[in-house]
Length: 270
Image (cartoon, rainbow, N blue to C red; front, top):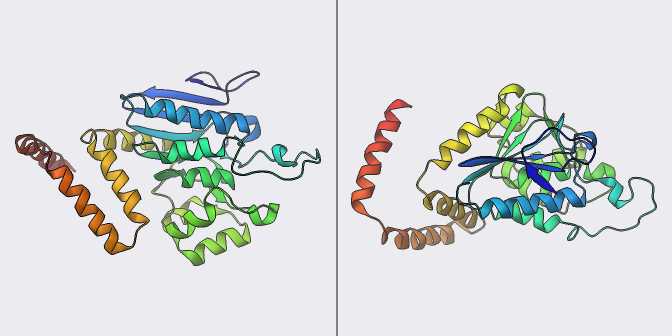
């Protein structure tokens, strides 16, 4: 169950909060008593929230963060026997996983993970599914799959090497040791390290900045980057040329001229 912005979680409170500040929205995992562990209810709520925000034409960028002291402690192990209930086996492809991951990945605008505390295992994967990562000083990433006895199934073993290199990814995943905010930034995993009290403000500032780009074009550029990144370089260059050529046919030269003057003025102020 998701809701609009409300008070921190208490008995019967929703597991997910959505705060709309058009043209951006903040999605907050709201199980602070469980360090925002991803149970089926929360996973399904995340997927539903992103589908809802995608359908809202006033929302062009989204921030994902956690309530309390953690970003997300990972999978709720009680669902796979961590609570000692004797459950054997768990299907990583069901239980809301697809809805959550696809909801984030298919959102047309930028999604920023504002990592306010520990992001472990599936919580790490949740952050990696976002387009950018801001992390609070003192927060950390952990891949404890190999220590818990579960292999990744939501993208960590594939996304992490692509961001920080295969050797560093192996160090993180095969040791299970914490990756600090500062090292995550140095290794190219995090876009920015923020003071904890400024984390959301800085994420919102960038989200609003990106959302001020030309409607439809920002979303198309994001799609081009994502699609081309998975292709061999020459194929990706040809793909960009095809998309760019088609887009150029629809350009209003007078409007481009007006925007160019505005962009030049903006550049002089930076």
